[in-house]
Image 1 (tube, rainbow, N blue to C red):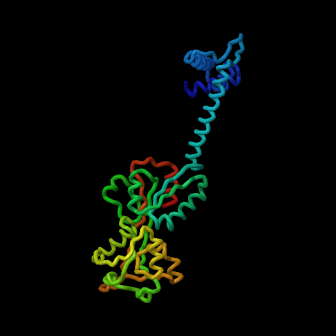
Image 2: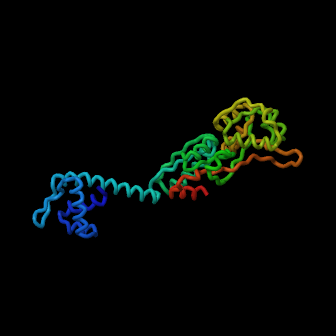
Image 3: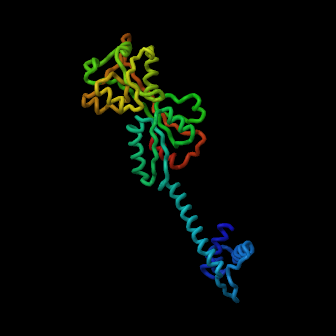
Length: 302
């Protein structure tokens, strides 16, 4: 039983006339007769009584008519849904993002897209950079957003593109000795306690990479607390415990209110400012089909 056979049958059931059904469907009358005959032979039933030049629908025909109508309506709805999806009237985007980007950078992009395409649903998963990279490689997300390095083992599966940059600020609370200072030298990093993000975090990767470039021995850092959230790190440092490297996006308000204070790292030999800056990466799976919806969201991002 084919969809075309059902479509022809429903036309005959509506008009109770083979020729009129053929005209309505823009096909020949023999094609209509052949489709009905094929159904009757296949299932050993009569769908219509032939009475002279007229036809009447049988009980079997009435049963098929009710069920065929449901099928045609469902196909019509499915076709409509596919067209709406292609026209960006509906659909879902699955995003994975590291915490800072997801909380402070991505919402504005999503809001801008939603204003243009209100029927689109966003499903956003937050995690550390390593988790988002792995999820993107596994095809869990249409796009991933992270800072830091993508593992070499995943690079063959992931396509990367720079969307912007993220800067880390070295911040302390009011009770910290550095609160009254504007700058420190790299060696002084070993003279205070630190509150850190967990291993695998993009923020932590950025900070450790900077320290290595400044030839600071990571094993000599006095790490007193480790959290899996930069918000927790910020709150603890604001409360007076240690120093921390926190994304600039997260501490703008606290710096304005002076509940946190940022210090610059200065190279004593050159007098130049040492900054901790990493790109914001857009990730996508190389083998995942690129939908029109995903392409439209990429245009918003860039």
